[in-house]
Image 1 (cartoon, one colour):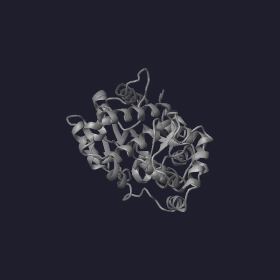
Image 2 (spheres, helix red, strand yellow):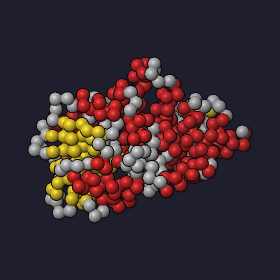
Image 3 (cartoon, rainbow, N blue to C red):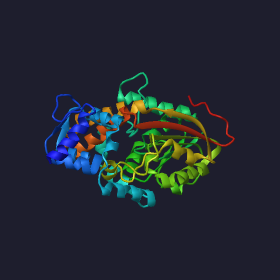
Image 4 (cartoon, helix red, strand yellow):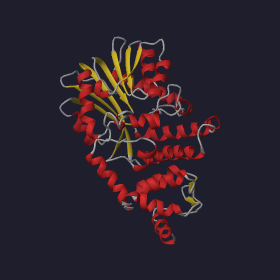
Length: 369
């Protein structure tokens, strides 16, 4: 154990992080098993050790940011198991029709109260737009407005929302533009909530896999769903959208993105938060849209996601007294590690948030900004 401790201590010290130090980004090790866990399993081991209470950090987001900025995660090789997971992702379609439901069952079908307390009144589980406001709820309204303006939605439009979550975007569009909205999802708890949220509005919420899409739409939008499609299905997804979009229509895709093309998702996030998730790269999205769409606008809003997840974390902490009878301390620490790790990754600029406007070949160029 002393050998493992010395290795990790030296690596962290090289980037200004001290074990049991006094800076807010220093970590306090409560259990020496942390050292072997991290060196063998990288972020999977680091996250699991945090969930167990084996280490703490006053400013976890900054700790993660410093590790990623320095590329320290790449300097730890990890064990054979991690490399085997990458090989599995390379060979198999981990986001097949059957496997795509795993994330719905594990994450999105969690008790709706958790998300309604953590998120904004429109229950939007995606990056907000902190434009002229620092308030999460107002910033979410600014994001919803931005989406609709980029799509140039009118009352005559028939709109499709792919991966509608709890129905907040569909509700906003119907309320503000009085147009027809079809919202699809595969997570049963979200579908039930969305139907109630959009009651008495021209919104139809349907349980449909994107691979089974039919119909013809003036505008199509997908926010925070593409991260669950997977590289082997990117072209299939784009073809499904292309088949349903009218020739003069507009498609807006909002997705978290990776700076580099990678094979698989981070093992900790894959195991505990988003099974089979995968962040697309610019190259992967480009290959998927080639031959189908014209790229009209590519807007990087990554700076807003750091503030978004920090606001979610604050809301979750404030609401924990209402939730602690449903979820144990390990679950709370899991969500804390998830949210603050994301904040650190966005601060380090390892992840981006893209809004991409696409049209069919020959369509008139829309006004996107």
